Length: 421
Image (spheres, rainbow, N blue to C red):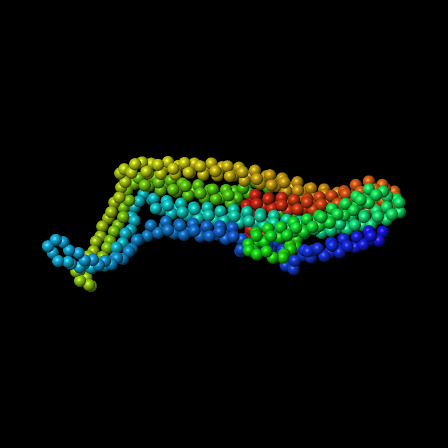
């Protein structure tokens, strides 16, 4: 008797003094995680820089529409057979201006604008994906924290059961198999606490990664398991899909391909460029002979081994590919919306079912506890009821966690970004 009491006391001490038993001092809520991730997540930062690159690339392309002005300064010396060396100095300014190229440059600029739009949609897609990963990581840590609490409750249940069975065994009212089973159940509960603590550590690191923190720190999260974007009324999936960033990105890429095809056709037309220049030359510094020029230059490709024909064919094929990709992406987006919406409704209904089951199981456990203590219920039947209670607690938590993840998948399918909150 004394040995069992001492053992139980030691196990209680182990429970409350295990490393990591007390949650970390920094407690984060969902909105705090969102704000930090929006600023520090490396994927979001990289996607933003991709937008800036595309904007700069558009400016590079558009620069061909403006005058190109350059200055030059030359100094040289030379001689021919039978003559002495002579020096030559010159400086001046030259300028060129594109006048006509059949709209090739304008088409390239418009294509570059669509590339910017595609990059912005790519940023939205990255933001949406990061939000999903962040929400999943937050939910996982929240679930693991709650799981640790529940495993401690289960441990307490198992400990009380062991005390009761020990008393009955010592009184001759219970067999040794029941005592050994209760001890094994308590050892299992102890193991589950250690396992839950390790899962909390892994989930903590994952959340920190999605928030963009580079060093591990002790954090915990606060929140509930309430689904807020429930969408109980079936929405118009076709209308929602039109705003999906993956689809919008493909649409922008298709438009860019259309302009690139126009530019490829424009390659067959001549280009007209205006040229002008002014400067001075002379044999001494500073030169005093004025020079100037003004003219037009026409360029027309005659034969390049089928280069331009191949470029047109390539542009046509790319445009056709993107058109089909757009159609496929639209169908996939609508399907994903319907699937995730259905999964969300199933998950929310399952939470209610598990809640009712847990309530019933808790009540049944209380009754069985009283019945077993006065000998009205056998150990085998009582243990089944207690196991059902343990399983019901875990199942309810799993259902709540699954509902939050289903909500996150639904929001991802809608294409909502990290600013959605």
